[in-house]
Image (cartoon, rainbow, N blue to C red; front, side, top):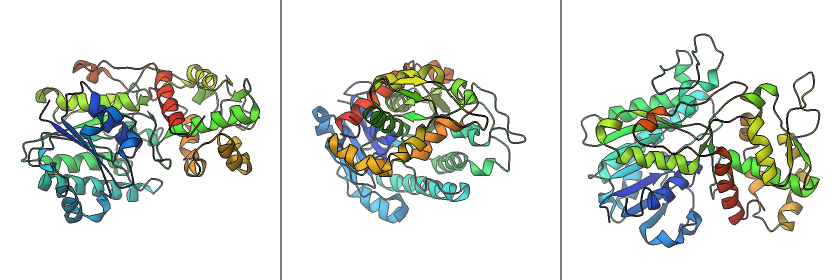
Length: 391
């Protein structure tokens, strides 16, 4: 068994949950002798749905990175064997929905606290993976003066200019991590997925697109009937725009791959991670068919809005029936109320331009995984079914 020990920050989220799971099995079950999953929110071993490897997984709740370095250091030092940690995978995130500056300040502080605490608690650290994302390329500021946006988006692309650059918190996170890494024996890298498709046991995970669309289509099939047509909620631009989604397992595996690769190939570098190229014109009918529905293209009117009720508007129109639907199908309560419908809507409706990532850099270091997009959704939906979130 390998002497390596992995620690995951943010293990209750859509990225961190998958990261802890994959560290148990990828690239082999012997890659890490132990995996430590940390979370601020309550999380159990059973939530990881890998009971056969539970003896190598330890879950520690209440690791609240907002409490400051001293408190977090004390918490980490209370973990048996913390000195043996060699690899850290950072997937913590906070202040979702805040303005740009609040979001930046909060997430830089979380990362800084984590790094400083680990430096105190983990003397054998070898590698730190910071997972950022496609917003690094200025997707939120598409079309603004001076913002050069030329997909496929490459890791070598320059940062977007001010005044927009100050609103991309990933830049500040990377700068802080590399500053704190100076003079140490461990190495760092940055990985960049696009929209992550996956499952998390925490129903209020704000960045979980698959949960929103899965709940919507599962309910639609129940209330409108199998075979019913589901109108794509965006317009023709969003329907045809190209992108590469990032299934959670693929992201986690790339994170592990770079952390175990030869140091000269990865240290201080960035790597995009994504699945096969797709657009909603291809993927929407497949998603709907999984639930026994017929997915059809946009039917927007002159104002660019769908003529037929669909998307978040349809879900909200059925709010009086939510509890009855949940009870009738034996599902967990409270999930619909905490799902980020706005996040689902944003990805279906408001991304009206190509945003595909270039993944050649990852391939050059030997990471060849590139899933067919629907496969990532099927994996997420099956996990959601097992957890009684959809039926």
